[in-house]
Length: 337
Image 1 (cartoon, rainbow, N blue to C red):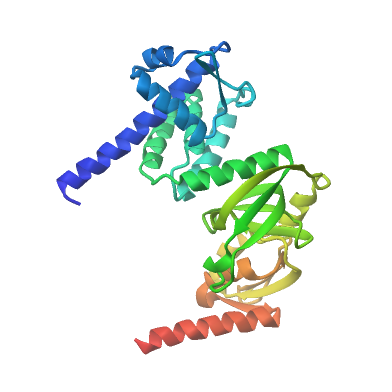
Image 2: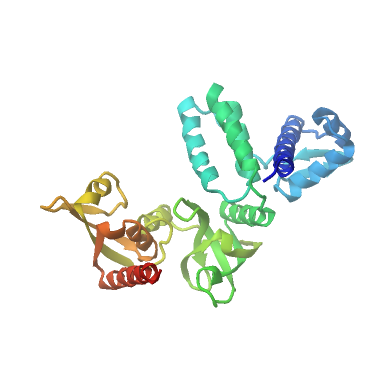
């Protein structure tokens, strides 16, 4: 990238940061005025033209999903738009920051809602912690926006929060080439992030399948929020189901996986709790046998392959054969070169 391109990229990132900061100031200004404010008053407070103030109000509704009201030339924020303010201790605010930081690290696109949460955290955290949040915002602002994905997520979150059925069009062909898209009516039970795949997942009841299903949010092509409500599952149902999952997928049959780790890997395996059901049996040569009962083998297979030649699948036989075939194909590819 030459100097001109670098300057242009820096200018675009700066414009995004300025726009985000302006949006935040507009919302805070309106929050403090239950009676609303005119676009002229908003423009004067933020330091922009009336035309820009109108554009910002439209963007807050259409791009970010902030519910605004307009009456008699005055604009305001719907009182139900925000949750009550949290009074966090330094330790609590830091814990929230670390969780959000993990989300920001794995996000592929700019997320205005995550950025807004970071902006509020920056105000609550003292000194260097607050400045670090501001620097995180600068990094996030360089990522390309995904307005369609953000809108889909907002509708899914509303369905989850309001217990409303959503209709979605899902495209499984990214992972399974040739499979057509399908339409599903889903009861949103949970939206869960995965650090393994750097993605968000919708977990809910699929009416057509008559069972719980997991949908990768990035593969959802269209979302409609219906007026129909659903009864949530019994308390603890989703959490119990997720305990079986390796990371996210909890709608597969339970399988006991037994692995044999070499001495070189045994210490690293033993120092972490990889799954709630895991059991470890030390071996005489310094290695160990590891076992757990998980929901299917799709997700744990990638973890096993990550250990290379330091692990051997003992059970189930189907997973052992699958991993062996994958490794043979990989070895053949390297031998061919």
